[in-house]
Length: 188
Image (tube, rainbow, N blue to C red; front, side, top):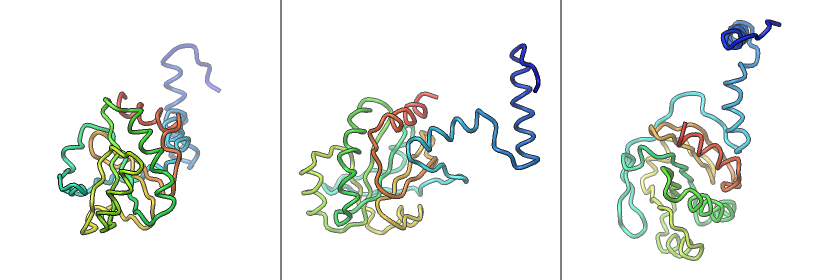
């Protein structure tokens, strides 16, 4: 073990650990593991390669349009769901609480659905008092580009518009772990 008598020695140890990890396939150094821990504690899997959602302009049930560019600069939690999906319905209140907890901060929950029953969508969102945007992916362009195969599927997108992590299945989106992760991305 290298004695750590000053700041330089600490960085030397991290460098040596990183080099060993690369050469021998060992676990990554402490700093890299800490970032991944935030994701795993929040129930998300970090993506391994750079993924960017396609440029899109999607309608809401009331006819307004939201495009990808309007979300740049905010951390976005994009939740793919449908009215017929029971686990989707169960997690919606947690998404609403998360959106409310981070109101006024550079964050946005966005619900995206390929469900074409606009009346059912409007009734469902009204019954839960959801106030985050619900977008209609009528041509499956965003769902297909992000390879959504099951519902619910959720993506955490950084302020630069890059997908950082994903989750398949329902989560407790308003838990302290998720709040900590999102805040770490808003204010790095």
